[in-house]
Image 1 (cartoon, rainbow, N blue to C red):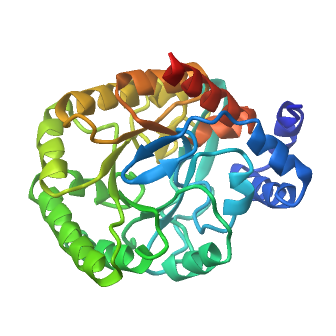
Image 2: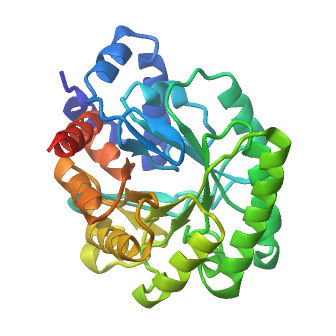
Length: 343
């Protein structure tokens, strides 16, 4: 029984960030009830192995919902095949001033300018260590807001080293629009220097810990198409294991005129759907066969998820669609992808 249509109006009466906290608290409570098992059993099995990891289905939770890895048990009840936590920075930071999260109900979209608010990597790792898990956990890392962009690699190397033992994969977030100049790392010499430094650090950590942890790079939808060839060449050259396409967009044409559409920050939800799929298709055309792509952006139905898969994604992630559609969306997407994989 889907109760979310009854609960959502109550949540939407709250400030968006307050509703976020309430929802996570409710999931934590639900994790202690029989509902959790029922919900998980209702999600289609669609196992796939990528990056050396076994995923029970192709539907993941995108980073941003559980920044501090404090609610993994509750979120796992929804039936995700993998969960990505973060974005985490080496040091705790408060993020941008509130209000910083805005709903655009007419477009079933969100705008956020959270600014990597988190309790720091050490706190999140403590949370993860105390949490049973039976699906892959990705840890999304970024740089602190006050670290100069020229020294960003230092933060990413420190983050990679810190999370290496607990992460099933590490996502490198260089595409948030809410940290000054961060997106400058996506191209040119800055990008190749970042990847080279991360590859060197990963090699050191692999030798030290005796295990290879995959790295995925998360890119923006606003990247120009003519920049993608250099980007894909660099991903392959430096041994990156996957690409996550895409983060939020700073573009606003599809929500122009809607209340709060002019708020600064990254736009997510259905207005991002077409562009993120275009980026996935362009990446698939350029990347070697078998190079994993995780598709995210505007997935609010099984049909929207299939667009990503048919464009070339191997896995998908959802976030904003969950806010508007509730837990049933995870089931709907997993079932659609499982049916497609059987055909």
